[in-house]
Picture 1 (tube, one colour):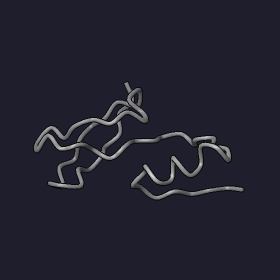
Picture 2: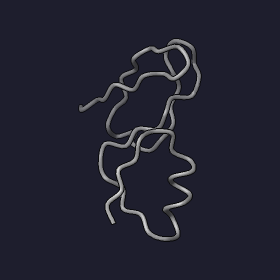
Picture 3: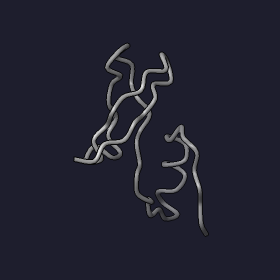
Amino acid sequence: MVTYVVTCNYCGTANRVPAAKEGISGRCGNCHKELPLLYCRPQQLNERTFDTFIKSYDGPVLAEF
């Protein structure tokens, strides 16, 4: 099973997140606060979904137009 490490924004704990949980919010194993969303594959957006995704995602975004 492929896992990725997501760092908690509140306590700095490294959390292993399965790749199958892409785009699903989880909780930190240490402080139980919500973890940032994990995206390990490019997301195809359009004019209807772009603004919503950008506003709700805290991480860096690379856009190709």
